[in-house]
Structures are given as structure tokens and as C-alpha cells.
Image (cartoon, rainbow, N blue to C red; front, side, top):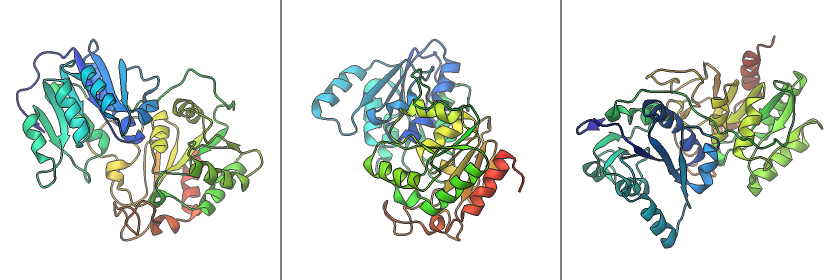
Length: 362
């Protein structure tokens, strides 16, 4: 962490900026929670993409959510700039991108940010920041990297990931602990497990006496994939794809006995609820992107780079292969690529993790 002079006066208004995916927003909540605990009287506002704002629903640490389109037009940008201009004492951005940087520059006289390495485009940003941290994409978990941004403020570290919550009625009423939630579909093809694997794990869970709940978003491809899976499962399986808000899904997951999902934002959300989570990972580096375990409070990464591992409520199942994790977009190096390590992951390994998580006899 590169600092100029440390902050001496408690800030009155702080802006946190995370303009990326749902999982990135969720993994920023320990940073926000730490700020709330350290500066209980400060106004904490959060700037993010409108498509990810649902991840903060019901979050008690945030005073105002400021959302913007992913591709805003000139008028929307102008309105946002007027709203932000010098309204804050401190702006903190958790990413290296240009837009978060310039919004932070506009918003506050003191800026704290993650910056690219000097070998990358954008290294110059550190000259316009009061405090900066060089981005580490390999050896530091995202939660820990975000918490390092607190150092200039002398703030305490809180490691709690705060999931969204909803006060709205749920579309499904099941007895708490009587069901399992399966989330089979990540956005990127290279993160997907096999349909055959999902069918085997679902049938095992049903034989173990658990109701089955399928979760997913409203996107047509995702909806079709989950409908195809649903047709091959027991008749009493519940398909909630596209039927819940993210906060409602969070509440449903919190009442489940177990959650099984791939490398996706919903798996991070499930981890934050505290229930046992089976996370199926392939190319992605778990040191950086594994779900954050509940009650894990350490400055050290919870997971190692290679191997299936358990930390608290997280059972991480990693595909096998000398190249795993490659930290690339599948075997063909693009988002619609397959990943051999996941194609060849047998359901038996996942079932064994479920047995351990539920403490079932072999």
C-alpha cells in the first residue's frame, strides 16, 4: 500500500465504487462493513452498475445506492457527474478501470484505489491518488485486497460478507433445512459442469431425503438450460429460475440444508448465508476467487491454489489436471470454450463432499 499522509480527521461522507459483476459487489461488502464499524456516523454511499444493485438490497451498512447503466449515454454521465462532484470527503474504488477512477477523482479530494502494475496501461493513475494499492490477480483473495484499502484510514477490519435480504414474500415455502438448492448455470461456458453431473448429484440429494430447488436467472439461455435439467429430475423438483429477485433467492438459500453451484456470483452469495456450500471450480484460481467462508477472520488467504479443500462452510471441489487452475477462459481461451477439467469431473467426487457436508454415512 502506497500512502501519502494518513487520514487524521474522521470522514463525514465516503463513496465506495465497484463497477463490475455481482460477485465483485458482494465481495466489497466486508470493506463497507468495516467502514461502518469504524465510522458509525459517516454517510456511506455505493456507486455501481444498475444491473448489480440488487446485490446490496437490504444491506444495513449503506445509506445510498447510486446506480448507473453499464453503457450510459452523455446525459446520464452528466447527471452522475453533477451528483458526485466534490460531495464526498473520501472516494474508494476497488478496481483498476478508468471509469471508477474518474468518478472517484470527481467525487472527493482524497482518493484511495486499486491501480494496475507499472507494466500495464493506466499505471499513471497512482500520481492522481492520495493512497493506492497495486492490483494482485494471483496471490491475494479479493476480500483481503479490498480490506487493504482501509489502511490509510486506520479502520478496523471486518471480514463479514453481507448477503442481500428481502422483506418481500417468497415464491416458495419449504420447511427450513428440508431442501437443497442447486444452481447449475454460470454465465460463462468455460465455468460449466456437465448436465450428467448435475443429474447425478440431484438424484443423490433426493435419495438423501432432501427436496430439490433449482435456481437461476431470467436470461433465455439459462432458463432453457435449467428447464432441460428440470425435465430429467424427480417430479417434485422446484424450478425457481427467473422467479425470484436476488434478495429473495438469498433468503431461500439461507433456509436450505446445502447449496451446490459453480464459479458464479450466486455461489459467493450462498457462502455468505452460512449454510454448507459445495463450490465446483475449474480454470479459476481459488486463491483469488474462492467463496469467502463464514467466520473466517484472517489476513491470510483461506484457500490454496491447487486441490479440493474445505474451509469452514465451503467445500471447494476443483477439477483435475496438471494445468488446473490455468486462470484462463477454458481450453480454447475464450468465454464460450469448454474446460476439460470440468468435463471430466465425476459426480462421485461431488457426492463425497455432500456426504461430508451433511455428515451422511457412506
